[in-house]
Image (cartoon, rainbow, N blue to C red; front, side, top):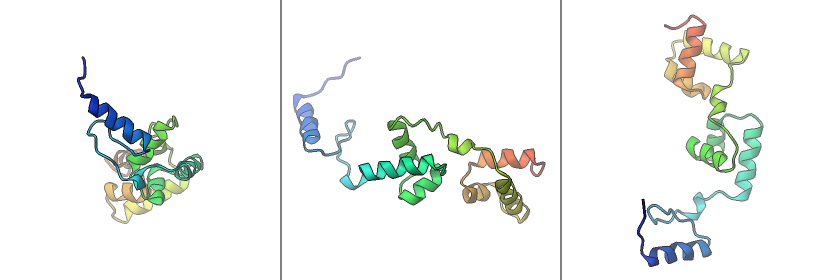
Length: 132
């Protein structure tokens, strides 16, 4: 499979890279510079991740999406495999889960509150015998 391009497209991308602009190669669009990761943000991201903070909490703290956080960790070769979502429930987590469920909260609401996936919450509720 070959890709045909004009010479001007290559020059445009090279000029943008030389000017340290951020370019989307697929569309040729330029991303606002404020969306780029700074070295301080990357250091903060790694620090938060290494402290055991969940991806959703990091995203909220850094005012970015979970996918942005996960993508940047992947780019940095930090293997997440969304493993933060698969952390075993602690005794405190289970108590919160049971309390929320018995107070009438739905599994989707609980998942949002606990920063877990819907499937994780349903699975844990089933293992506790609280949900079918």
